[in-house]
Amino acid sequence: MDKLMRNKKAIILFIAPALILFTAVLFVPVCKAVYYSFCNYKLPGNAKFLGFEGMKFLKNYKQLLTKDQTMRIAFRNSMFFMIFSIVTQLIFGLFLAALLTNIRKGRNLFKNIYYLPCVLSSAALGLLWMFVFTPRLGINQMLASLGKWGGDCTLGPQWLFNTEGYIILPIWVVSFVALWQYVGQSMMLYMAQISGISSDVYEASYIDGCSKKQSFFYITLPLIKPMVATAMSLNAIGSLKFFDLIYNMLPEGFLSHKADVIATHLYTSAFKFRKLGYGSAIGVILLILCLIMTVIINKFVKTENYDM
Amino acid sequence: MTAAMTISKEKRQAKTVSTLIYIFLVLLAIIYIVPLLWVLITSLKDDSTLMLSPWAMPAALEWGNYEFAWTKGHLGTAMLNSLIVCSITLVVSMLFGSMAAFAIAKLRWKLSKLAMYYFLIGMMIPIHTILIPLFVQFSGWKMSNTLIGIIIPYITFSLPITIYIMVGFFEGIPNELFEAACIDGCSVYKMFGTVAIPLAKTGFMVTGLMSFVSNWNELLLAMVFISDEAKKTLPVSLTKFVGPYHTNYCQMFAAIMIAIIPTIIAYVAFANQIVEGLTAGAVKG
Image (cartoon, rainbow over all chains, first blue to last red):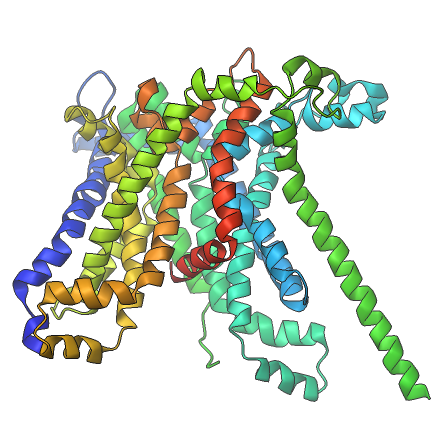
């Protein structure tokens, strides 16, 4: 048996396809992206390394971090997205999970309804919400036909076109749509963890005179902490990578880059303006942000494993 | 007397609370379902009635919207392309992934832990970072406008999560089963095919669902790699329905319906398995 499982040929045969593919299509490109980010690389043309003297190879990053106005906005919007989604998904996800585990009838039905948008294409849902928030149609038209703004829907808020404020209105709208779409995911994660808590613990607490509220704060919350870390890092990475909804809800150009996030900025720099080196630098920064967030969340939400 | 009264009072309170919870849940469910119903209704109207009266039900069913989206909007081809891409990705990533997972979980070699970490790092890498190098590479190989050009990255991005989940399932299979197979004269390959794979069916279901759903909805990579109208996948073709100057909303809604109906049907049919499977995957991820 042992000899059979140490069969070198078999091991190589089993691991090789995945390993080769993974290295060639994921690992090598990441290294290449780092290299390109040190290059002057515009299409048409080839990648030219910027040179070591005078830290010249950091030119893309310098430009990106100090001079690029769009990057500043994109960074701000992405950070807003991330914090918004971490906080709201934590609160609403936990809240829904707590409600759903406490009802007897229809738990599966509600759960499945709230989870549905998670499996649908965010490209399609983005178009749907784009329509809902179009100034002359959708929500504004409906409210106007009910007599708001004297029946004139153009007086309603310009949901997707208002560019005033530090975080502009379209970003808020997209954030809420993203919450609507993905809160089911957080809810499911928390529910899975809550259902793993033994009912003995709750019974013991009731005998000790705990109210339902108390048992939620003193039993449920501490016991699902590991899942909080998991869900938070999923949210953080997911919202940093956020692209589909923004791209489909906010038509390019109308907002003059005020609603850009890191992913859309990368897309326009690299594939609209053909600045591949510059785009690679954005990609590398995005990667670093993802890694940092994962580390931070797992450090701060300390997971203590209780026996359950 | 008083004790009975407090109990009934408590009961009444509990009842109000649970009624309030149900009211809240139903209202929330409406927020989830109404937009989708709205898409359905609007997709059957024509554009001029939409502008005039948002509330009206469609007077005559405009199936023309769907016909337009399916043929002129290239959604028919796009659907076929998506199906091809996702099916091939599904099969290959599950095969390669489960092979690697088997090697990591059951075969004995020194570097197996390291290999696992190597794959796990892949889960944290955003697709955006490798988009540019891959694009350059695949253009060089004349693969940038082909379906295989997006299938390969899709397979690669499905691998880490597949491997992670399958390792969990393979580790759960008791070693005695493999020993028994060994005594019966099984080779390693036969063990994998006849013992490991059949016993990890749930794992295949979970990973298959995850990779299919995420690849079916993937937009960015497909949009960058494919410019040929005949090779676009579903999410990419959808974005073409919004023009900067004129958008026919009813046709766009028909297109949205075409894009989401297959997913909704599959979801309604297997909702519990899908929800449970995807969560199991995410928990482990």
